[in-house]
Image 1: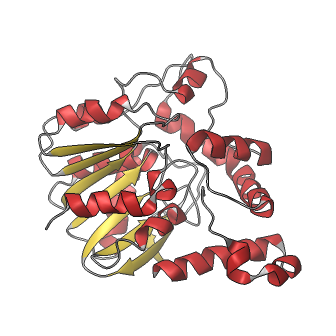
Image 2: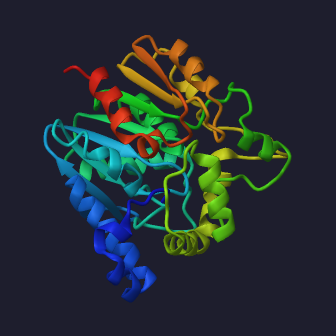
Length: 310
């Protein structure tokens, strides 16, 4: 989870002083969900339970978070979309509060199949689908596998562009260093904030410690999932179903958004994908990092609203 709204303002300094960090964290998360009109729900698929946030009304918009993140990455932006869309943001299997089974395969084809089962479990038949980073990689493959269900595709700094130049993070991988998104302690979490955002949002120290505690607990499974998705050998990444292969000939309306200061994934991926998809629109956001829906939620939402004029 890579965001936090002013919890101290929402619940007050006295509550901050008296509340344990774990409870303070939950209070802040719950408050922001309420402000955005989102409700926590669960659904069952064959492998286990999927937790998700839902709110608003209108055409469904299914939003998929990135690696090491969770459903709450979309909360800030969702409040700008719920007047027109039924926003649905699940914890992808392996992350957040959804099923976490260490013996499962979490590569993209398997996650697409689980996502299809989740969509069926909550009665989704036609919807917009979007995703950030790993979630964009999954969303793109889902759209190709199930075009009859997908009204449009929204990619925000997506992973999976095999022909893109190396980003700073992929340079780390080639040098066989720990990638910045694979976090195991509080110091690494602070480093991630500086790496993922161009202008990092304020997060109180007590919250960083709680977030770091959660990511540290998830480190073993996250390490396995990272390898399953990237298939790294000798520093080289080998995507199973790269977007710049599967999206060739894709004909549904597609919005591609990328931050110009993304250090995780190279911004050149936006132009590469834009040239492949006939009905695509590319928006490179200035002074923006890897997570535009958190760094500039209103502006990012507006780009989708302008794109979808239906």
